[in-house]
Image (cartoon, rainbow, N blue to C red; front, top):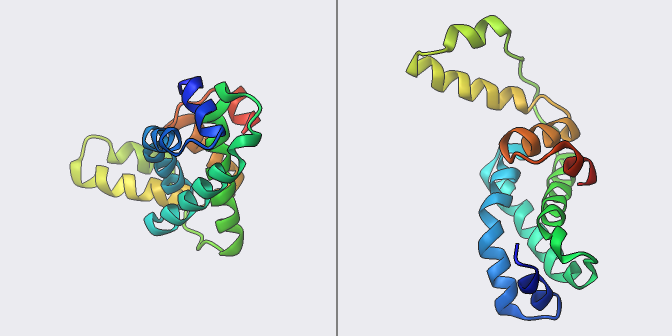
Length: 146
């Protein structure tokens, strides 16, 4: 993110804040969807994170760390949502099931659905680490900060 845009938004510039939103909201929503597994809940979590972002942006000490800070806010909103509601456990896939589905379009779709459900069996903290590392591509050190 451009440091000057973040600094302008920190000073209350709504246009700069809108620029920040446009550049990050899709990524934040994708993370929330992966963590929560539900588009409506993800939308709510992102909205909560965006409100917190506007409220707390002036306190951000290092504008260069805006992206990591924004991820942290959405992850917190997701974890708060998960604490409020319990997830239904689903069975994990065996390695044989994963290998058996390779190359078959119908089975690939089914496998993707099963993997999504399996992701839902992880604890919220573990799911968050997997999403941030494998889907977003953040390095482990940055995930630890988040």
